[in-house]
Amino acid sequence: MDAVKTLLDRYGITDPVGQNTDPLGQDLEAVFFNQNLQAMYDELIDAGSVSLVDALEVGVAIEETDIADLTAAIASTTHNDIKTVYGNLLLGSLNHSDAFIANLAKR
Image 1: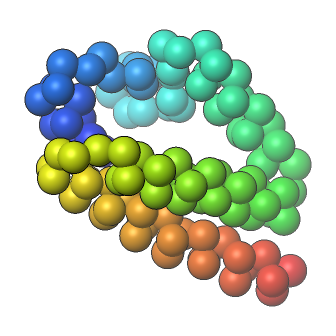
Image 2: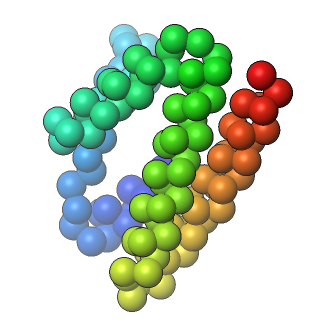
């Protein structure tokens, strides 16, 4: 998150995620300024809250989307700093996807 925030600041892009914190300053949940992102987030939270299997399926869907989006984003930029951050995020999404799929197979 810090690396992405650095890129947002470096390239003058508004952070699409706000923070919703409790009185102790702990994050409660993501709040998106973009209403489409907020609706998608809310829908995925609802879908994944039904059962463990549903949560794992939502996790797989999110990671598959991230992998496709990051692959396209890497191909579309010429900035090495952006490619590096996207590449690291891509590796994380691949690992997460494998973990979700393995856990889903156990159920």
